Image (cartoon, rainbow, N blue to C red; front, side, top):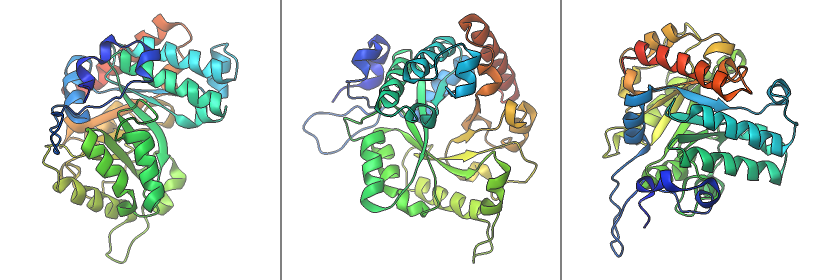
Amino acid sequence: MPSGWANRSLLDPATAAHRVHSFARGVEGLGSLVLTRTFATEFDRLARRTGPLCVGIDPSSSLLNVWDLPDDAEGARTFGLRVVDAASETVAVVKPQAAYFERFGWSGFRAMQDVCSAAQAAGLLVILDAKRGDIGDTSGAYAQGYLGPAPAAFPIDALTAVPYLGVTALRPMFDAARASGRVVFVVVRSSNAEGFLIQTATSESGRSVEGEVMVELARFNASDSEEVGAAGAVFAANTARPPPAPLDEMKGLFLVPGLGHQGGTVDQVAQVFADCPRRVIPSVSRGVLVRGPDVKALRAAIARQAGELRAALSW
């Protein structure tokens, strides 16, 4: 089995797209798999150097126009590669938004694959923001395509998912992520106001929907031998609403959208996650992407935001 992390910085994007990517390292011929590195441990290593910031890769029509790029798959690919260039050595994580690539059909999928490969080759962790979610065999198919076992269709390190067909329906994705050292970030609290109606609805147990999702994620992670489990949460910090449960009890990572353009602040992130600051991956997209297309200016904007978060979360 390939060692994955040991050689990823040596891979050019074209090669990386066709290589088996895994955090796991095992011994051939043995039935068990021993994980030596996981998303969580690699995030911790990278964030010690750069801070925890995640930069979104969102080639929307409006941003492609701002960058004077064509609104097509090649424009999205060029956009993504420039963001990777600016983010390399500046942050730990990038987050391509799948929808902005998928809108171009098969050529968009290919562009997204190239961008993900380039990001991994540059030493960045890649969270694909695709918000997948289904039941049974379909959930298993998503797991195979995005999370392994090898070869997965896309070279990524984590995937976002939605829980509204049931958190346990995502079990094939959780299991695949655990086996390969990846993470599934499940939407618990989104950054858009219209999501609050569903997420704050009360279940028969008396807990809110977001609280129920947190309980299920904590239950899965409790069975994980790793210090940080494979079930993470998307949990926005651009609202004053208190968390539905103690966040440090989930034993997982938090992907935190809503910074900048959606009104979230660095101080809000630090306050909400005061009990688990080293498990937080704050994400910013448009707030820095408008500084492109000049890579130097974009890198400077990313570095400023990264520095603020590094200080606020004590990295």
